[in-house]
Image 1 (tube, rainbow, N blue to C red):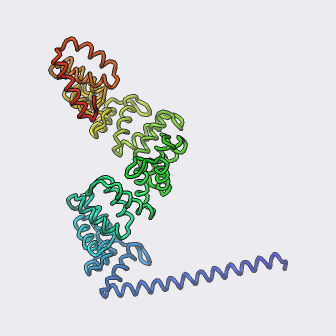
Image 2 (image 1 turned 180 degrees about the horizontal axis):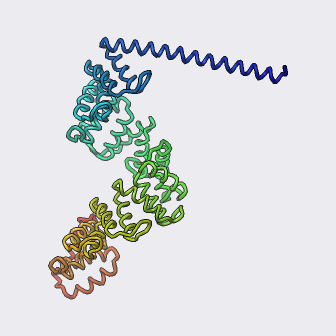
Image 3 (image 1 turned 45 degrees about the horizontal axis):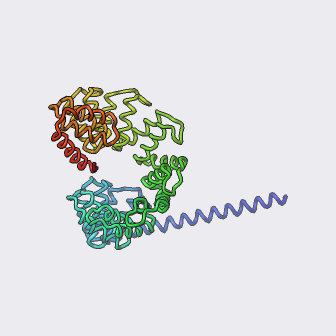
Length: 446
């Protein structure tokens, strides 16, 4: 027998021995696991609350038993009714998520509260979320803060994150950036990507800390690398804009926008639409632009709805349709998008995509103009100067032309010069006062 053959036989023998040992190990451990399961079932049937909870977990996770959420609910309930806090919290969660039982927020609230009052951190945090969102109970941010704080003080990272967000936004507590930073840092240190993203926002905006784009970039990247879509989009935006010490990098921006867009981040989808429509960082592609605009618009992103309105108006990447164009402009306008409101006002004025309607035109143009939109302000000047759908009124016409002119609209300046000779000094003075009032309403000064 050759040396090579003997070596092969020895290796084969060793491999068989290892396989045999592994098989024996798994058989023995399976037997031990089955015995443990049987002991747990026996204790559970005898009324042991801890065993009932554990049996519920076996059914919930499919450990040693076929997964059965209804059986899990049954055993969690038996333990919960004996006051077992963890089972109460789990039962509340299953009611809230409709797992193994019909969804019932009131029952979820009841079991969460019972567990929370025993100091169960998950239940305290979930109870806070229900109060914050107004699910199964009247919305109450102060009550949400109470439960978040109790869980946060026990080290629950999600509660710490929620508490940090509440202090940053002034929900249930006065805005306090120091507290927001404190709780966000605690959650971020535990790897909470939402809190890490919020730290990035606070550094970017200079909230409670000196504005620091590099520090913001650091936190956005940490959160982004953990898969947080919002942070990925914010990181991409910083690379796309490239300002204040952050070098513009279209390739990095595209990489992170794609990653966030795949997670249905509507802002990232919007930016991808813009990049494809302009051919920035990618080959110009109207079809891809339309696709990304649609995905963002369908999620309610007002900017994307506005751009999709133009896509249909111009027939770029889609079949041209004035009706569909107006549909998307309307959706954006109803969310307060000033440019969409202005376009919608013009559509009603011209009868393009909708029946002509002076009342609707005036309504939407006014909403845009009051937000400081120069084109809408000019349109209102024309409407009042010519008395279209309203009584002719040079005072209001002058006021709107004046506002539009102040934003650099040269045609509005020309119209001011045309109607000024037709007005008395007192009318002009009144117009200027109106202009100041409109500007103040829009948050501007003249």
